[in-house]
Length: 400
Image (cartoon, rainbow, N blue to C red; front, side, top):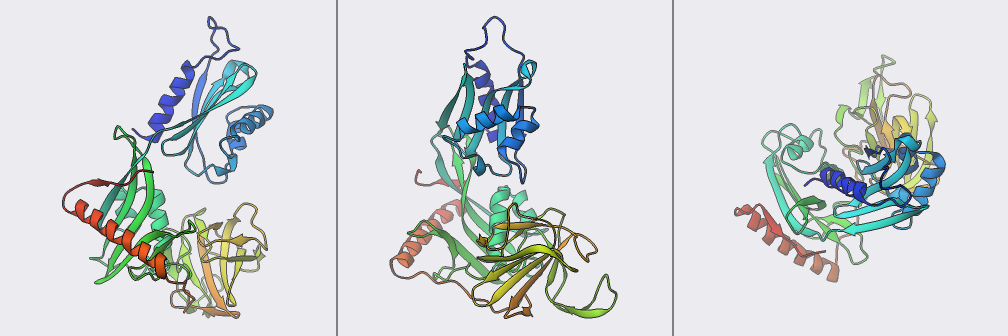
């Protein structure tokens, strides 16, 4: 049963719940709606867009906030509503599934709101996909049944090491292991974490494992404990196509040759742009030729530049700290541009470097007890993946 199906059934259950201020003999006309959260949406905006009054939306959000912070809404999440059209679209009930197996329902009872939370026990299962790369990594994994959020996370993680525009060749392969979350009756609730990824590129194997450190932070490591992250993303957006490299070129707008001090990646308008590494926002402004531009300052005198954006991330401003992978803006065609793309630069002490080849700092490797714990978990995961390779579709993991 999919999350959307469970959501619809839950709303039906809410329809049957008693509403104290409505006479049983004259039930109000009711309408159900399921809204999908889009990038930039807030819960208040979603409710008012459904015709709910601002005051009532504010009151409902305040009640819901006791168990669910409204700012934690995620893109793609569904919000189920039960409305009374004959009472100016009064909100009767609301339901959100903030995580697989966890449902929060808000319903009106007399003159107050009642919040109920239901948690279905989740069982984690290990699933594995292995396939030749045909049509790109994203398309290959999507066809094989990999959840889109995990595919995006994988591409962002491997962008430290792989240039997905130039490194993928015919005959290359990919293998991934990730968690599926199931209810006790076997129904699929959703997905958990991506745990392992392996790429075979022109005969060279790149294999990394996810490791949760003692402080709770998770990161990717090679088999010997070297970190995958800690450097800079070579491609700070998903699904892009390299259209212009670093060095001398004929300028597409000006018509004469001059040095191109970064890489250009074509992508659909609105495609999220990620911070290439941890840093501080040095500027988020309109710049001559570059259009909407974000400049990030990183340790060691390194600066990254992201130009021609359509918009900046909400509330992004100079002085803000960002983490690697944070969304800082969206692809556009502002400034001197012939079409939607990202112009990406890496500068060291003010001098432009080729992002595809620049020697950049790496993170610290695991040591001592942390390294031993990583090796133990890696061996166990390899054993479980071998069980799947021998014919099983999934392997049950330890419970939450």
